[in-house]
Image (cartoon, rainbow, N blue to C red; front, side, top):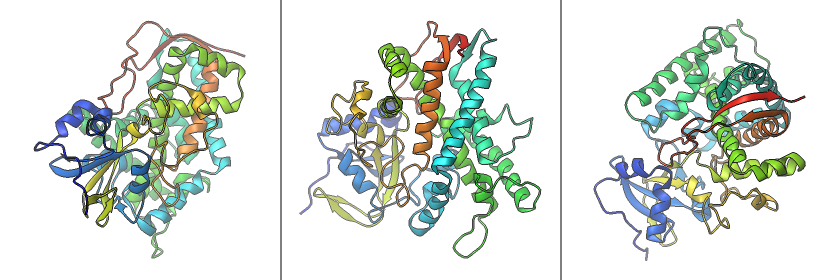
Length: 417
């Protein structure tokens, strides 16, 4: 006999979700003293859950599916129509293989080297400026490096606009009004531009290197041997560019953590690469990135005596799982040392999703993210001097995505030999 799942009373709690942001699911997991509860969001019945065991269930492809689960506003901004995030089964596996092929150690090192090159070039310009807005400048660096790495040629008149358009894709899904429509318009512009590039590749007018995203997705074929339609191929190329630019969120929190924990900066100067990775992992765990992910129950099942009915929309708490005291000792304390002997769990540490890389929906670019962050961390710690003047460095747990309010202004920048 199944137990009654904790239930949040009321007609709809979308406004509460908007008011509480990253803490919405975690607050109720604590108040119900249970890692799963039922509510209503966006006018529909929904199940919310978090924690390691919940993540294991959530990423079981026999129990949950992604098709039809993502809210329309996410598809129209963040994901794009028919992108890999909306696929299941063999279609997802085949598409994921293509993404994973781009994430070889050699390719990841190539991107890290490009980021380093673009960063040093930018820092030389920063030396001549009174101050710079770190978040915006890093997006320019990552946008340029991502396009070079993906084999995407950016027209001169697009270079200034592209970082803003790619930023809008991940800043607008949770926004309302004009800010949300900014993301939709950006999605239309970028898809049109990348789609034209793909057609030029197929017509022989553009010849990107064979190991790049533009080349691979231009010539990617479906199970029946047909080429991926132009719009979907463009969506997947953007699914390479957009997440790289989104690393700017992690990098802003990297700079913030160096400022708030100066003792860590001193450790990083004398420690080896292992400590740098520990620090990067703690930034990814501690600070807010993406709050939750969604799926639908594929077929009804019972878990921990709770019934999950077929078709029920379900949300997994990413932020709350990364701050779960059952998994992490003193989870609200910034402590890179916790990763010293960490063996790694695909379900307990999920800043970019959980589960298996190839068969599941864990972000294909996770290791790429780590290497880009490590290169940037080394530059901030060992290759640059800078000052952070007085400003509003607080960040919201309601706004999604969250970044320090000032976007971190730095000045008196000096590259070191």
